[in-house]
Length: 253
Picture 1: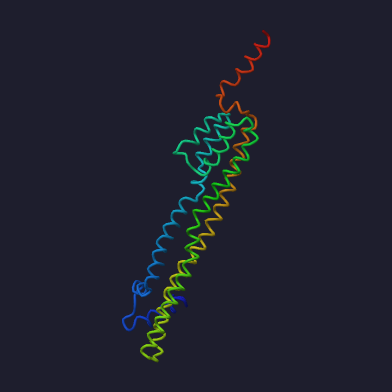
Picture 2: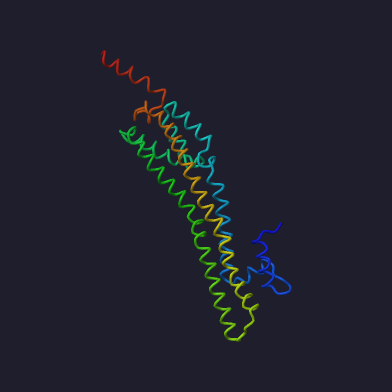
């Protein structure tokens, strides 16, 4: 069953296409350069939307296998091994990039156990801001598309009235047909802008959700470091028990 907007658009095509009617492609072509620009932006927006659906997922930002591996390493106190795991290119992810900053600070600073929280917060804000910036293109397209549509409509209406003024025609049907063609770009701009703005908001909300989940998981991982000192970052777990025995022997001698 055809909706009211569908019937309106069908009537618009019938009026502007004459007896033979017009196809969607012909209608877009009548939109002129602005119509083609909006069509190009539609292709770009579609590519960006598909890319973000793939990238902004929990399994991509917070891979469960990486979470399990890092949890095991940090539970054993192997901070050096966890940092080495994070630095491997094949393990690059939102989680790993944030945790790398904290583990590096923990390993290199004598007060790493106290500074790791600040390092992780700074890295988290930076990585989240990068995700936000990656969605800005969709928001820009959603904001520009209606303006381009309006520009095309104004240009088309100016041309229509100029043609009528030069010919002195008083045919109301011809005037309506010219104005309806001018409105094609507005329709195209709104058709592009509405889903872009909706998906822009959707992606940013997903980023907020996954950023909160990542913060909770990283906080859980860093709890394993509370009982570890800075020296544990460079010493393997098997070598730590030998240190007190050596010191005790020196005291007795």
